[in-house]
Length: 145
Image 1 (cartoon, one colour):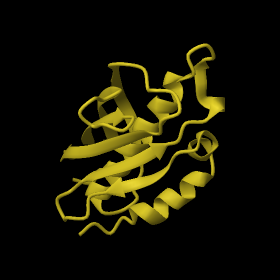
Image 2 (cartoon, rainbow, N blue to C red):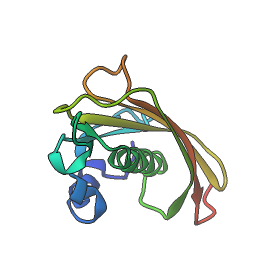
Image 3 (tube, helix red, strand yellow):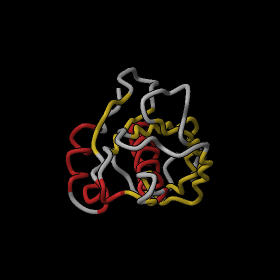
Image 4 (tube, one colour):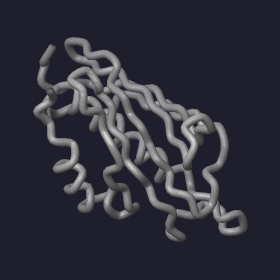
């Protein structure tokens, strides 16, 4: 089982950028080989990108997915070690529905000597109808393999 305490770390999200946009813990894999983390972004008027439609801007969703995939890397590694986002491609499939919480699920599916590979999706209530898909890489800063 991973030694990285996802719930405890998520509590610290209340500080900084994640806390400012309201991101919080939702769920995580509990099996030894379940290297995924879900975070939630509750709807808030401050996050609206288009006042006429009430749709959340893309920036907070990008932040949600960067944080969820990053935490999935720590979950897989079993500890908090330095890494940096090299690439995070986000394909927006549709706008998030107004007044709905967006849930972002990140998974670290492969770990190399210096690179972690991640994927995930964001949805607003139905994982089968995603708002966005993500794929990316993180550079592991400590040379751990």
